[in-house]
Image (cartoon, rainbow, N blue to C red; front, side, top):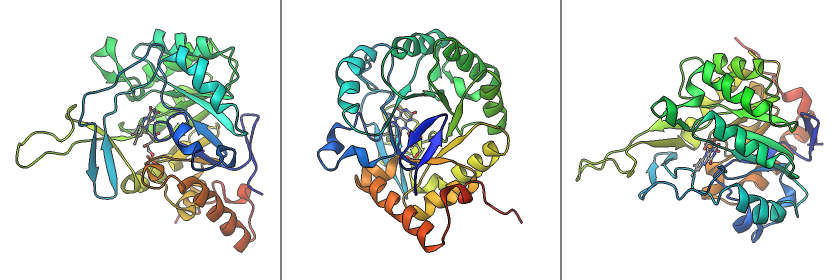
Length: 300
Ligand SMILES: Cc1cc2nc3c(=O)[nH]c(=O)nc-3n(C[C@H](O)[C@H](O)[C@H](O)COP(=O)(O)O)c2cc1C
């Protein structure tokens, strides 16, 4: 009932663990069988290992959180040697989330993963572009297109371009990725945020600013998914603040073919399983199929 096909990849359900909130699945596998999930998007992996930013890297906010983890990860070699073989012991779609500091970095990591048994790639373009003074790749349609092109040339695997919401017109970025051969779009990554400690007058995060995620960003995510789904012909995977089956259904109605669950997993590791069950219950109670829900919003 919940089965879906995205870019010729079979998903047993449309619920995917979002990058950076599920690591490489190890901790969660001690709580439940990861094969229950539709898919897993891995922690953002870079060519070389990264230690990430200094602490504090997390700040609480009402109905959400700020993070500036800074892409801490063991690097592509370790990922291929130990994390991927572990993930592939589960019957779920494995999406390698990749990141880079230059266009060449993105091309290099994708080339490195090409002969592995990952199912799909998710390219995080919210990272700072070191050659352009740290402005994120995903905030300029020309640069987003450049990254897509560079990655496309190195892989035959399905490429999901993951967009940053920190832009004026998200459809321009999505169209730029589509024009250079992206197979799928996922959104939204975190919104840029900041909190200040009243006593010290210093930002709570060591890095001053960080990514805002969780329930509070849900309406922004629904709006952007709706806009992108109506601007491109590619399938769209929606995320941002989803914490219930009803929220997932709303995202599907906006035009997403599947959803990712991020911050909700941090507060409740079982959230994806609950959401899968709640989507199924909604469809049964309303005598609907998944296909009938996708993009079914009726504008006023
Ligand atoms: C602690 C943390 C780490 C994250 N790391 C990554 C990452 O490595 N790569 C990436 O593409 N997105 C990363 N994200 C963004 C999430 O995958 C997701 O796009 C975002 O949090 C919005 O969804 P949510 O509100 O359900 O968390 C991270 C988010 C959090 C909270």
